Image 1 (tube, rainbow, N blue to C red):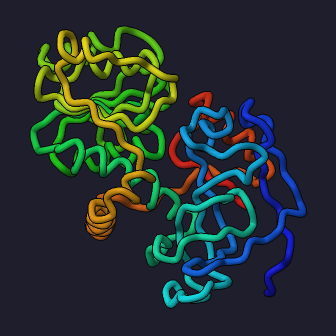
Image 2 (cartoon, helix red, strand yellow):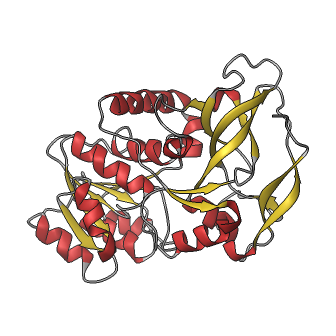
Image 3 (cartoon, helix red, strand yellow):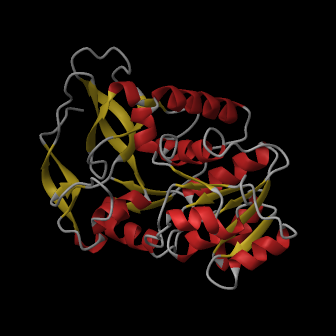
Length: 330
């Protein structure tokens, strides 16, 4: 099958949210440059960063109109100059620009092979959600056997991976999710699941820990949830790894760090980690491979939407009405 000159793709036309994402049928198919590959997209991953970009709250995000999406998996159909791996026909997953489309260019060095026996849909998350969860737990969070970790948004793509990994490393897991998602999270191995939409979360966490608080928080809730994370982390030794802000921004002052929240607060952006600390990212991917080989992380089937339904997928993700990984099928 030859490579066409135009394709179907989603374009974000404003900073007013996903509802202004439009399907276009004559987008130009990109050409791979030096060190790049062109893939025929089989499945594109939907992430909360896509929602943030659509609202203009993603720092350094693109300006509209722009090709939407950044995570995709598919087959290599063309290679640029100086590319020896991956080869034509290889199945890969990676991040780039314009993933919500029929074709996408990826940096060859960052194109990760789809594991043998996995579909492209199942490989979504290998380069975004799973490394984020592992980075938050291990090199940044310092998780150790016997410690207690609080994982917000535990039913999401990153949260589910974090629950599995935290249990593998011997931690006690307290998770938060909306009531309809509790059974899903418990099935992953969480020791306790609390209602993320109601009640006094901080009081419930402190009760579960006998008043001592948790050793580590994986914080993606934002807004009022960030205050909960700070309140339940152990004084002095507690760590709060911030990798999302689904509930909006939340301030933290130096006065509060000295007099109210004597905890370690660490920011995590997996894209920045890839670029600024490639050695750590390489070690993360090696650890992920070992976890997959050991069966700790098994492929899961995402919830799929047609490409034209991209705005619907992002809107439902923003409303926290989804479970697990979401994928668009071109």
